[in-house]
Each structure stands twice: as structure tokens, then as C-alpha cells.
Image (cartoon, rainbow, N blue to C red; front, side, top):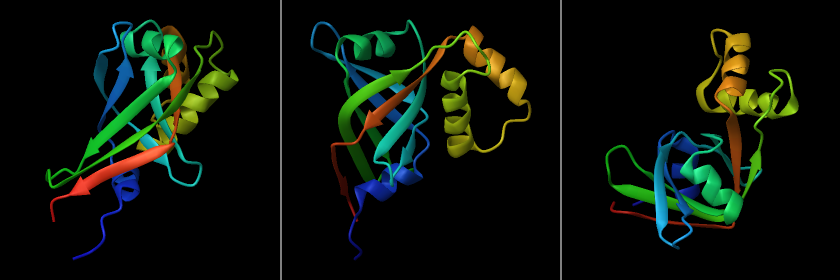
Length: 141
């Protein structure tokens, strides 16, 4: 039996559930495409300005992200403070550049970077950066 490392599961996962805190104190859950930079200890997620999770984080900058192994035998959760980068009105601005970097790291190269940049501005995309303070999880194997 090998030791389970929840940080490895976080690094391998490209589908997770982001939990933010509603004004009522209840969690608000959203499926997201995370990228975990293990060396930096940060998780990056592209979100849209004006949506519930973005408004929740602006009010209470804490979140958790849960990922599950594709076969369902393990899960990992990361918790920590969150910062938001963006939105931007400039397709070539630093906020959009941060989203380009996120995309490259999470999904690879885009077929049309100019189109991507313009969509990030028109959709009012924001980069959510969760600094990982605590990680926990469990393996059933």
C-alpha cells in the first residue's frame, strides 16, 4: 500500500468543486477547472465577475476546493484565503495575461490567443487565486 498524498491528487485534477461562503453563512458550490501550482502553493480558477462565487469572495475572501479521483476512490480538499485578479477592459492587460497563463498551465495552448483575450474581456473573466493553507483528504485504497 502506498501513502496517499492529497496534494498529488490536487495537482492531477482538472475538475473540482469550489466552495465559497454566501452572505447567509451557507456554502455556495460550483464546478470549476482548477490548476494547482504545487511549488507556489496556489490554486488558480477562471471565474466570471458578477456571479455568486465572485461576489461571495469579494465579501468573504475564503474558499475551499474539493477534487475527487476519477475512479472515486480518493478525494482531497484545499482551503485558504482568496484573491481576485481582474476583470480587465484591455485584452493585452496584466489581468488577461494572468488568465492566459492559467489557461496554458491548465489546458495547454489555445488555437486563437487573440480571440481568447477578447472573450476574457467581454465575459468579464477574473482569475481566482486560492493560497493553500490547509490540505486534507482520504484514499479508500
